[in-house]
Length: 216
Image 1 (cartoon, helix red, strand yellow):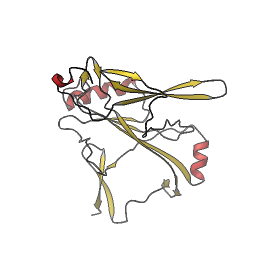
Image 2 (tube, one colour):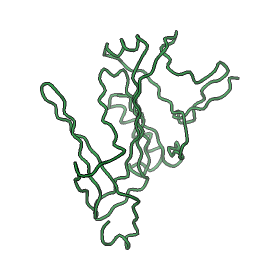
Image 3 (cartoon, helix red, strand yellow):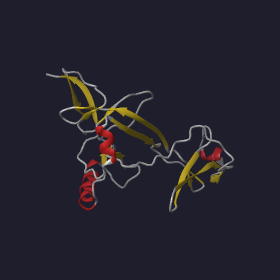
Image 4 (cartoon, helix red, strand yellow):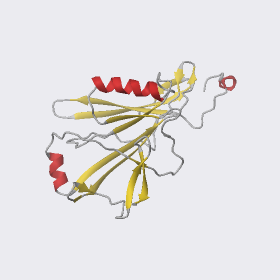
């Protein structure tokens, strides 16, 4: 911490760690190198090879991916939007010029979706849409009854804290990579049955979270 930390009123539990990956592509291979930095005395210090991080997150490269979905929660904290109306107008203008790569933006500021998770809280998030698939290997794997799923959740503190012109690293990510078996149905492929015949999904007003409700 800097010498004036007591006057600044800033406390840090543990050491802030930042990891970044560098991809070098050669004619016959792709080399992935990881660098590790820790926050010391208001400065990011390169400690690659000298500090071991127990909860290192893997770098996942998707090959023959069938679909990619990324949901972003935006608020006035990190953007120039003052309210949900400003945000909706900005998203409408953005959609006119940018292609849809599976990115979904949801207003999470005042009056918007609650994007805070309590410890050990489980919530069902809805991902929906239509994507063009241009690869055959992924379709062949799906037809064989198996598919690989990768999921990642990233978060950060609402308030970025600054010390001597350097921001703390409050960003963290949890990932999951697993192969699942799928069952071919009349409507597509199913890998996990959540609802019984007397239940339905009921989306929230923001079309983000869904709740299991009895069928009327």
